Length: 182
Image (cartoon, rainbow, N blue to C red; front, side):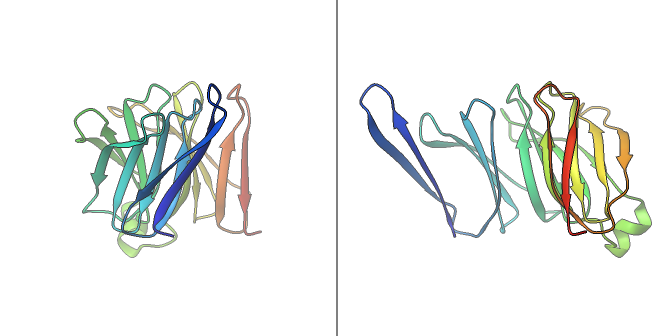
């Protein structure tokens, strides 16, 4: 599908309202902010779109020419867009300017050069905005500090025997859940 469809109910008018955003490319990943205000959509053209669903408009778009983006999310404050890639590179983007603030390699230089199980399949941000949770092809879940100026791996959770496909974090930030091929 090349479009992102939004439908919601206008409580005052009791009418179904909808929006359609044609990205002109396959949609690889979607992420909604906790208040449903913002939606990120990653396309197969290395572009991540940020939509204001209340206004029904695209508010930001970033293209990563260096890495094939697989997933994205916004920090709870909405000021930082985080993208992750097939190469295992995590990028931090300033939403206001659209400029990249920084990058962080999740894997060793050797693994990234050989593209050995480096793909990030899913990315979530903890509700307090301090930690990113990444589901990785290398059978791990990575907890990454969300500070774009000095990100570091807080923990690398091991135990899956297959690729980790999805992850999420509890509302109180105490628990991480993951789903894998094993």
